[in-house]
Image: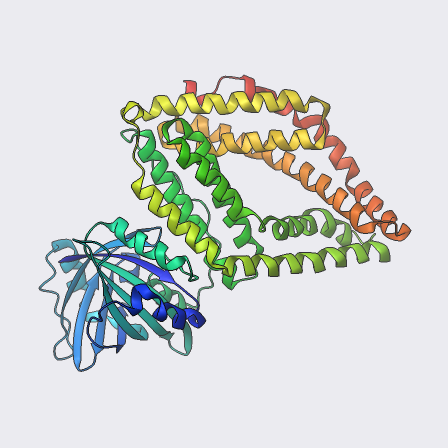
Length: 501
């Protein structure tokens, strides 16, 4: 058995020529000849190997046939490490006797009689050897071709950096050097997973934050690293979807990933190097810039304008305002996708992953108990929310928005630290925060929409009347929510906190 450690990067096909000409690759010695690899992936009709996160593949390279078995890999920041068994594929017959993990071998033997081909990959592979420093050897493999399942196919264009000797951080150093001039993006989804998705004809779906995986024995810095890698995976998954799909939920979940990352930076700030926190607070804000307008206009259409349109009371001028919103939303979505296709986001993801791997905790806080750290930090977040609550007593829209942001940061902190806290009471508390946050979100969306519609209307009397009509349509609900939102928060912000029990 071997362990394959690789960093997978995707790039547009039109960037292949520039990749090949990059001095780092163009001047490197070649490993073998350029070849076409034909791969067939097998599974049972019920896709039981996929369910077990295993893969069985045959590969034809020239006149040679190989059989490969792979098991699940945890991929973070595009970097993955997985157990792998490779051997000759003889007489078109599988042989699993060389698999030296009993549980894997026995399962494969059970499935063997029912294995059938489910999809294929065919690509041209060019390989060069990189030796950036003594003791480091990396295979850089450029793969360009297709994935096919039945009559469906998808393009494949990747650069894989496979570590032969050295430290995994060397892979990021190489990738960052290439990404200075090339649109490379780290990729967590394997060729096999893409093939299964194609075989099952499954559309790419927006990814949502997964439950926290913290455990009490971690140091604060190790806990932050784990959370940050989960947020980075969320960022990567939704960025890939946003580049391929018009579904606005991809952009929304991408922004959620960036907000969660920034919240984690604030939460764990006392345990992190100051320069790291400053650098990434600014960097993540920059990554989010330009993506908000499209999402905000989607929300305005869904929450503010569509209910008015569906009421049947919208006149011609109101319909004109709605048409303006649709046009501007579409233009912002085009601009957002253009931003995502730029190289900068890929470089930021790679740089963040590299910094996370290199991050070391200060000796004074490394031994601090994570549970104690968690309680102190959540208490600080609640104190800040109390200040925002007190400042919002006049119900001004901007102050209510600041309160909403404070509640969101408190909720994210609770979600990050939940495995260390009393589960039932804390979940109830977080759900109540989410309800209040949703109410404040609606109030903010309506206030932003009101200002935006007024600006669009300008001096046109009909459009100004339409903007006033939309505001008036929502006014009764707005008044009711504004009256009730602060009293409903008093028990949450001044009652006994579940993490203090």
